[in-house]
Amino acid sequence: MLFKCGNTGPGFEDALTDKVPVQRARGANGHLNVDMHCHAVSQAANKLAAEKAGKPTPPEKEPMGFFASAETKHINAEHGKITAPKMMSMEQRLADMDFMGIDVQVVSTSPQQYYHWTEPEVGVELAKLVNDNLADMAARHPDRFVPVGTLPMQDPKASQAELERCIQNGFKGIQFCTNILGEELSNEKFHPLYRRMEETNTVMFLHPMGFSDGKRFATHYFNNLIGNPLDTTTAVGHLIFDGVLDKMPGLKICLPHAGGYLGAYPGRFDHAYCARPDCRLHARQLPSEYLKKMFFDIITFDAQQLEALVAKWGPEQVLLGTDYPFDMGEDDPLGVIDQLKISEQAKNRIRGANAMELLGLKAEMLKAKKA
Image (cartoon, rainbow, N blue to C red; front, side, top):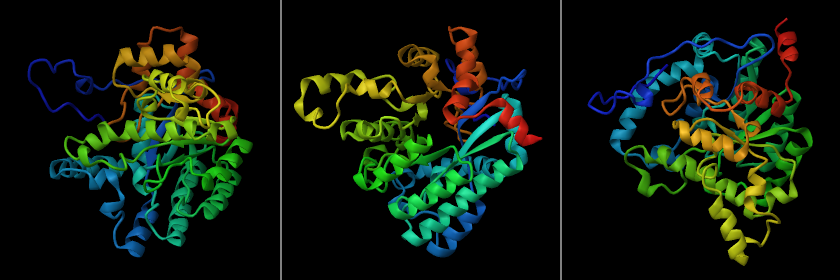
């Protein structure tokens, strides 16, 4: 599944993406390697979106496609020939998991299937199809997949009903785009969703879809390289500074891509909180105090940055994640964790124990499901 570095000139011999794939062993003796960040696609939802709206996503509503150069669109299309089958083929997915040593995927929809741009009633239908697909994956392989749902956020009331359906069907989390067509997740109309998630220990997984205003990010895939971590940073900033996390202090939040820029650069938030009254209007604590409760995946592509992430927030707040099957994902997560200069016990937490605790799972539960 590796996307290899295309440059073979001097200085690129040791590029991270040019490494030879290494097969890793799955966990044994009750220890499970759990991938908290991976994606799937519902073919039924794609079909319905095409029927109801004429196309999967209007370009003006989808920053990753709208703010993209012709070259980036071409590369995306070529990569899509590889990633699309992986997001729809159970056999290929399981084979890739086995090769990487992944026991369990906590699987969520591809961000392309948020469908917030559709009419509310269509959005509800699409969200149900997406979630039904995830539920079906978990039903067919209950020992390998844990579903994380999506909601028709253009209709908060309908989102509450779909949230309840997800909870009743054993979903352990909900994936949110980091903005809803440019609207902040901190908007009060979304608060009932978060309260219910707090009550039920349902995890909030914040996954971006490019930056909402990416005019400067069109070339070089910047709307992913820069835009994705920037939109996550913006969304979390609003949740903190708008006081949402004071109202729902027990809300469990997971941040992919190592937390955007906040995983490595929280000090600027804290400084502003102390220096400026307009940064203390709603939040009751230093921003870093809220971040201490959040979970970050390992996708940094840099060993020193990952070491710093673990040192800053603690190994108990870091999760194995791959972003499967995208080109901006981590293909050898166990190898990356193996290289960390921490205890084996701390590594085991990152490999899977943290995710199991966060989601309220036990190895015995997964084995019992399989039986």
